[in-house]
Image: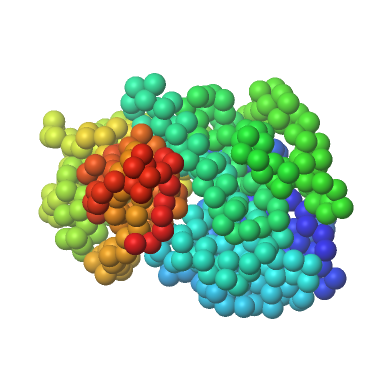
Length: 526
């Protein structure tokens, strides 16, 4: 069997009877409004072998995994396999752009691809459209988690069915706009970013151990930020985008580097060599030894393309208030649940060809969208009106807008309102109704016991955000940190520290030793 890394989250698997590629991303245009580019650059690879690829398997809809311009170049004989999600965006977009056969595979179902058995594990928490791809080959099982935050139920299912996988491909670098896009004191931004990086690394280590894979391949990040306005983010202390070299240093500190493979785009895994030998060889590449110079040269190669892309955004020379009203007010009318959960007004401070300030009061239906006249608001988005117009006109997903990092945000109080972002992301009454049903049916009765600081606590097991298993978390500075997305809950009150939400937690006595267990030790379900 040949397993070759093609960059970012793309893997080439070739056995005696089949060839498969996952999540190919080779577009020189990058992703998310010319903000993200592949690191290291994989666009110079010889892709001649693609004419003979039997299957392309896609995990989810984000542009760094779903590269439509590249998919248009596939051989007509290549079949495309996608997971079955609650919405049909992937399928509909493929049908509108390519003539290849598209196979939709339901979660956990087996699909035979030559001598490889494929199974998708779609995120069991609704509305998180991510998917782990499992390839059971004659020479071992390959688990490609990519961006998915594996919940306990999904991870336990995988370990039951695939107890000793050969390879685990897993995202280790950040992939979000927080805290970079938020206006806050610099020292606070750095503190939050460094905390998120530590939490992400710890989560990868835990998942690697939990899934019991022989080798870990850290992948699916970071992006290279090559626009001049974003270039400093590659190196800034407030960045949540560490390099493969940073992660490998952590793996060395934590004692699992000898089972960690750092791969360059185009590099095949040599199963006859030690992983450490291959990794140290990869880390001698200029992308890691001279990252600043490497990225500066890369920026020059993309400068014209980025400038042309941004210049192509259509100008508008009239107020967007009517478009806000037409787009958002019917959505607000459809969901009292979301109006109540958002519970406030948001200011959109628009720049570009027609600067203006628009207030949206998410508590209202009629007159919810209007020109700003000094009213109170709890969130402010500062953004080029040309970009927001793309969203209002259905040409840009809200996720794509956020991941472009081409906006600034401010919130008062400094608390994440998840419902605001879900409302803008889904923009669909049927999805709102599904989310409401899911929220109202969730059960949080299961508990576990935690020993910390000489005290024993009975704690709600599942995080209210995305059902992450808090019993797999760790305690930092008196807060229990969810291993999935890093939400932090006070051990004293159960309140989320920077988000809306809380967990049930009770102090039930002293730890068994009298002094308390090691910090954050978890004793399992109560």
